[in-house]
Length: 170
Image (cartoon, rainbow, N blue to C red; front, side, top):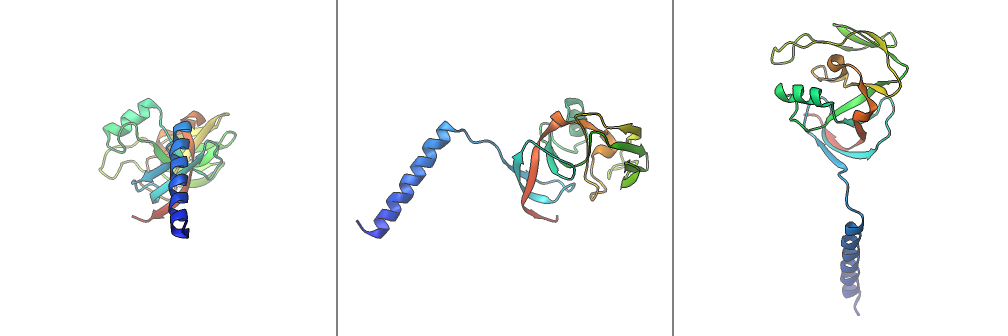
């Protein structure tokens, strides 16, 4: 048998083995495409469920928040958010309607209106995050709808940690 024939048969056998394995181990959705400006546009890999401060996370917002965002056309219903984990349990988060502070350090400015002129209600007050709570924030995107406005969420809303694969500035 020639080397070329052996190569083709080997590749074909490998492909058949992969197909057979995919029936035993159903694929999970791991590739994520971000098309919003609040995080770099591009492709991300869903790496796993555990997140720490600073990680980029894929987030399923609570139903009421998801519906509100869909009504405002921020994001279609049932489409997850991509946000950075800015603070976790034990950290103190404060909002004064102009800026957001974590442990006394200003981390983001707040706006009264979105880019279409609709009123926003910034997170107001101070609170220490309880166990299982996170504050999600894309501080580098001033127009991002994030924890500046909806406040802390529970860790149960986090699908997993995202790793950038191929991103670009829009």
